[in-house]
Length: 532
Image (cartoon, rainbow, N blue to C red):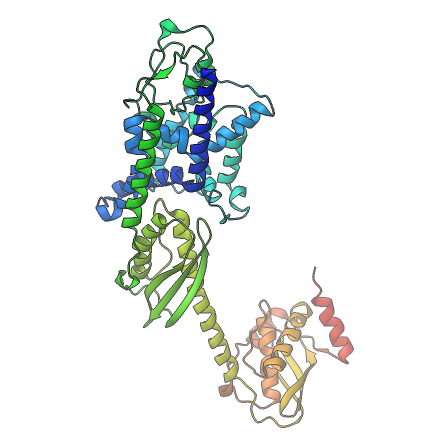
């Protein structure tokens, strides 16, 4: 009876901590991994100073000191990624009755994979030698752990999302599969937790032959041949203690579970307070505003949005004298510790370089990309406004003025020869433009004619765009309208024409085609403008 009570206590106490951790601090695992990346990148770049490293240092304080002192209680009780794996394993046992174990040499070889992954990130990714085209599965997991701010289905359809699904599927077959074999943070914890003071002892002389401790170990540790658990693979889940029928497996310190969980919770709290103190929002006026003449922008204040780690990011961009002078973060859902790094490093870099084509902040890639996209959106809004203003000026310069009602004819050089038009003016506006004759290839001419004629009538301007792929036919029609209305070239944008003498030599005899009716014109337009 006493053993069952101990088992229930261990089980429900651990489940309670895992649930609370999942609700309150679901992203700590991803924070630690990002912090490692920030520090390694700073070392490679020679940027070893407190301002650069204080946030990642505070992030590591959440778990590293407690892991060194008490062992991997964070992995066993607080890690949300591990908690999900535990839940999936529970389902496999209770619902699907699966039982698959990897042992011996295969197990030992697979356990080296997490060290290889860690080395790969240190030597290739965090050193900026290699840019991964996708996010890790833990990053995608972190995006879905924020209740109420789910990013939709897109992240799970990425490479990282597919890897995450594979990890979860594997968790049905092998308990804590990711933690055992693939977790790069677990590789770090394994190396630093070997000498903690809360050991689990299991004197072999008092053991029976049940081997339950090894069977129930979530990390697949073979406890049959040891009197004390010294391996860094142990995540202090306490299952070996709870399941031992002879109460032989036990912690060598009284209340070890409470001590380990308490110290880990304390370091997480200290880390959280330290990060909040270090990430107090600074006045945007104090941001670096060193300028270089990289690109000229139109003066104004613009807003834009981008997609960050947990949701949209809004910014305000201020442009003076053709340069970006201030970028302010308006709203975001991403974690403050990441956005603080972006605000202190990325925003001044954009202002200094006068460009959004710059590297993201290591360890805050999603937030960086979101801010860059938001700034681009703001500047594109500016560009769109500028282009619209230029378009309006272009149209205005070629507006029809002081037209007299009547019917006029005119011609101009097009691609293969003259194009002749008839222009009808009513109430001092161009009412209709009809094609009388043409020499061009029909396939191109009748793609140009309806578009150009309609735009001239709509805008009441000669300064309209030529149809791509039929520039000379378009320009010929525009020039012919101008000649019909006797509008001099200085009143509109001159149009480039073909050298008809050279063209005649190249194409031989020029054939002129006539349009006898509106029905014939529309028939040809429909023929060459039908979507394939």
